[in-house]
Image (cartoon, rainbow, N blue to C red; front, side, top):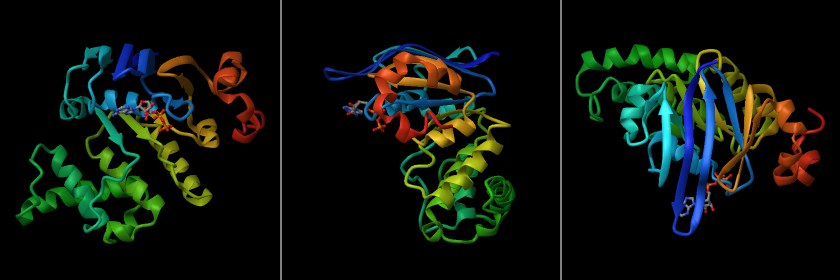
Length: 256
Ligand SMILES: Nc1ncnc2c1ncn2[C@@H]1O[C@H](COP(=O)(O)OP(=O)(O)OP(=O)(O)O)[C@@H](O)[C@H]1O
């Protein structure tokens, strides 16, 4: 399988702290790759460097064999990388459809003006409606974003990330703060998305990882200590020692 994303020797220092420490990672085209690791292991810092929000201290990031280490966020988006955030990025005072229309507009290369003429609006409405349908929110198009349920807001964020037609989706804890029902709905959505996108996913919910991930990388102290299938990771003694350890039962690693 071809590697879509190659990360070599990635190092990020925050003062004396090495949040990424000579980190190596490969994400193959078409796979869903989960990143797990204890709190503070450096998962979000890695995502921030992949999306271009923060610059590494050292190392190289390549996407489709192109060195993107020095590129800003918008240039990476144009190449096919999109991120859905752990923190909400939606406009609460706009409807679900209008939020996605803004995302489509941003992708179409217009600056972030709010629309002013009807013709342009109709050219945004139809792709935005399609994107809402792709995440299962078609019946909620005209609901104000602030009135959407928590799970629906995450669906909306994913629709907005899809507006740039990404090849690689970076998802930072898409199930954070969700109840069982909402989680199940998002897992189902991700099952569909993984058929068309390569996904790099930070997630603490092990059940989601079991059902979604083709491969898992374990991050500890800013370094990937193991990469493999779910079964390989479960059987890895170093992973058990460094991360899973006493939490195994609780996290469901033995029963899945
Ligand atoms: N902007 C920053 N300035 C200084 N230190 C930072 C900054 N961002 C992150 N860190 C530190 O870097 C380390 C890695 O943090 P990061 O948020 O990447 O971990 P994480 O694996 O995503 O954790 P969690 O699972 O809790 O979200 C932590 O010790 C954190 O305090």
